[in-house]
Length: 502
Ligand SMILES: Cc1ncc(COP(=O)(O)O)c(C=O)c1O
Image (cartoon, rainbow, N blue to C red; front, side, top):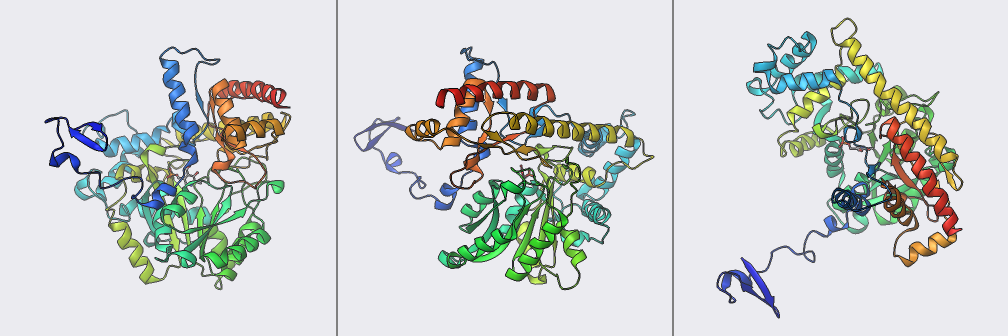
C-alpha cells in the first residue's frame, strides 16, 4: 500500500502517514542484486526487439508507418514465423497428453499410438503429468542412445544421456559443473567462438566465468582456425583457468559446417591444452551446401581411438532441425568419459531440478525415433520433413544471393543452421551519426531498418565481431513469400541508406 513520496518519506496510502509497514524498503535493489545477472546480455531478445514489439502495438493502434507489419527475423523461432508442425510429432505428444480419448480415435495412426503407449508405459502412473527420473524417461533415453549409435555407427549408452529443458538447460548444467568456485584469475575460462550464440556469453557472465573468445575466420567461410585457438588461450591464461572449449556446429550465427579435419584439429587442440569439449550440435539436421556434411564430435573423437579419452558433452534440441518445436523445450545432452565422481555430481545437480518437461521429452522421442519405412506414418513424415528442409535450403540460397548482390554487403555461403551473418561496410558518415546517437554503428543500421521497413534483425555486436567490422544476423525463417518481400524492402532501404550517408 505504498502512497505518494514526500521528500524522502513514502506515505501510507491507507492512513496517509509514515507508518511502520511503509518505511520498509525493498530487500533487493538494482544496486545490491546479484551483479552477475546484471552483467548478462542476450541480444536476440534485446532493445531492438523490444522496439519491434512497441512498433507492433503502434501499428495495431492505427499509427501510420511506411509498412504495415513487423517482420521478425531476429530469433530462430520457426513456428513463430509460420512453419507448420510435423503431424506425427504432434500426434504422439497429443496421444501422450490425452490417451483416454485419443487412443480410441481412428484418426490417429497405429504407429503414433504405439509410440505414445510405449512412452506412457515408461512414465510413473502411465502419465506425462508425472515427474520422470531426473535424467528423463527411460525409454526415451534408450531411443536417444539408439539414434546416436545409428547416426554415428558406434555404440552409445542411455547411461550417458540426460534430457533437458531445451539444449540451453543442458548447456548451463554442464557449464555449472565446469566452474572452479573461485574468482579473479582462478575463474574458469571457457573458450567460445566469436561470433557466438549469446547464451554462452550470458551464462559465462551469470556464472562469473571468463570468456575466452576465439575468432572464426570470416575470409574462410567462418571456419575454425587452429592458430587462432592457440592465440586466444595463450592471451587468456593469465586471467583465468582455461577449462573448456565450446564449438557450435553447424554455426549460429555464422552458418558454417565444420569439416571432419577441422573437428580433428579442435580435438587435438583440446587434448594438448587439457580442455573439456562442449559440442553444440542443435543444427545437425540443417545442412544445405553441396559437399557439406554433419560430423558429430562424438563420432570423430571415438574414431581417433584410445589415446583420445577426452571429456565431451554434446547437445541436441527439438527446437531446430525440421521440427522447430521451440516451445516444447525438449533437448538432450550426451556426455562421454566423465570421471565417475563428476558424473554422480552432475546427476545430483540435475536431480535438484527434478526433471525436464515430460511433454518436451515425448517430442524429443519422435525426433530420435521417427516413423520407419513400412510404418503408416512414414510417407507423410518424410514428405513434411523434406518440405521444411528443402524450403530452408532454398531460403539459404535466396538470402546469400540477395545480400551478395547489394553494394557494401558481403555474405558467406550459408552451409547450415538457420541464419546469415553478413558484413556491412558502413560509410564514415553513418558511423559518425551512430556515435552521435550513442549507438554502435551496426545497431544504428538495424534501428534505421526497423523504423523504415519493419524488418527486425540483430546487430552483430550482440554476437561479437572483430573490432572495426560491422555485421547483422538475420534468420532465414520467414516463409518464402515473406522472405522475398523482406529482401526487396531490405534492398531499397540499403540503397537509400548508402545514398544518404555516402
Ligand atoms: C547454437 C544454439 N544452441 C542452443 C540453442 C538453444 O536451443 P533450445 O531452444 O534447445 O534451448 C540455440 C537456440 O537458438 C542455438 O542457436
